[in-house]
Length: 189
Ligand SMILES: [Zn+2]
Image (cartoon, rainbow, N blue to C red; front, side, top):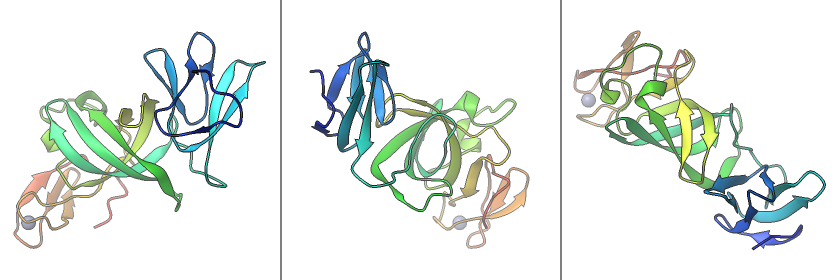
């Protein structure tokens, strides 16, 4: 279970252990095991004790801390909103695999937020910043900056996208429903 340079790997394949290597590009540390995030080829640097994966496309989009991503809210449950990450902002290339991220209620906006449903609802399109990559379906995100948050809000009653009417309020032009969101300054409707 110690991958060599040139080995072909799939997402979740074990490349080595964290006592031996530092996880680098396109890898993550899963409880001491370094695994691949993508389909690709292993690159092992024994001098620097680094192991990384080169994705199977020529110039891939890299997902790491500080990267801004675009995704859709899949679920809002308790303290955490789940996000299907579709793409990296300003990068037209789709991601090689789909990633699932989460936004904790404390990372949604600056200041107090009593309920996460006042920031996000299912179907909303959001922009968020990656804060930690823990695995394919475990990526921590935040939207507390002003340019981050909901860029298209979906009406919970009729599923139409909504118009912005205030700093954190949107209205549905189809059914007149008013709802709250953590809106991005790049709101698109
Ligand atoms: Zn509506």
